[in-house]
Image (cartoon, rainbow over all chains, first blue to last red; front, side):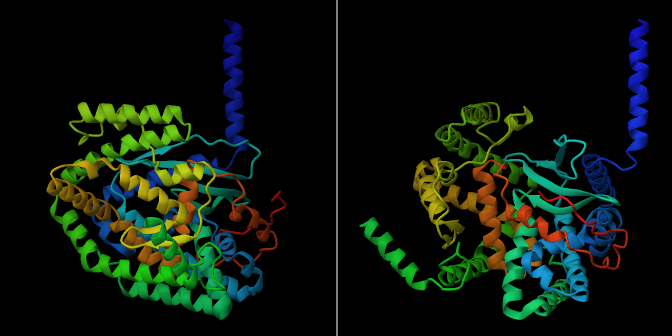
Length: 209
Length: 259
């Protein structure tokens, strides 16, 4: 009996120590917390779906801090990234971020309370690059996997790519970016990204139907 | 005769091949033409009908329609699982078909999913892929859209074996085929809107997404880890730019890692 109590105490102490040492959230816990928080906010606020600016504000506050946009832009650019100067890199990142946030807002607006399943993280505690799996369950269709590629940084875990149904967002932009850079250079890409953002904004996001 | 037709088609395609395009898409010029045609048809007919269907028919009913066709699909999804040696998945799909056809009232209720028997995504194109058949050139098929040479063959087999094609009388079959198409397009309304917003060049964006998606499906979501994205992470080592405005708490950290 004493041994069991002692073991329990040790375990408890270990847990305490563990949580004290890990100042930052584990990547899968982080994804789960943020996702549930966002989903709850959308469920509570009926009008948010139709209100684009409100959605974008929500994403800005809750989601953006956990993304590494410079890293995402660099990955999407591939080889071309190193050809850009610091100012161009900054502009590219800014424009790409705007585009992604708007797209994300549209995706959120389309979310209709499907069930979410958070899968346990399969990674070693020492890993600095992991994939967090979430699945969207729906009746009459195969579950849609959403995979967040995350890396450990000094500022906590950051997402650098999102894969939806096996399609990597970053990889999908690469051909487009490379084509544009080949045709009209880095500045051409900046121009076409900002033109794209302006059109989408002018359209008030997208037509509701 | 069919073989001759295919040979002629291939010759025409070859003639359209462009020199400096994407190696996966040698017939880009031709494909873009078909893509444009499909978009026109979509804008004029498919999208308006699908939108009306979504707005006028209650989700409750639409989901039953979806489930009904999904249930019929499970039959050959099971066949494809077996052809790929995935015995357990195949048994699950047929169990789904059995439960949903009976307790689910001809499939209009997906009781199997509620019981925890998940639906799979298989078709003959994936089976060929699993057997080692490569994508072949990317193709945009009239009406059907994104495909590859391999997946076109797969789609032909899918259509040939499609149980809905055996519905009789013919009028019932035609209505069923039409209803299914409208339902599929209606379910894609959100996705196509998002595509519209996200892509700089819709054709390229859709093509790359299709190729990525198929690859993922063939490997059931676990493709071998040699993705370009990973390899190129080494690119990030020298990255150290000023954080963009608004994300000042983000810093790209020097990476000593990357294999």
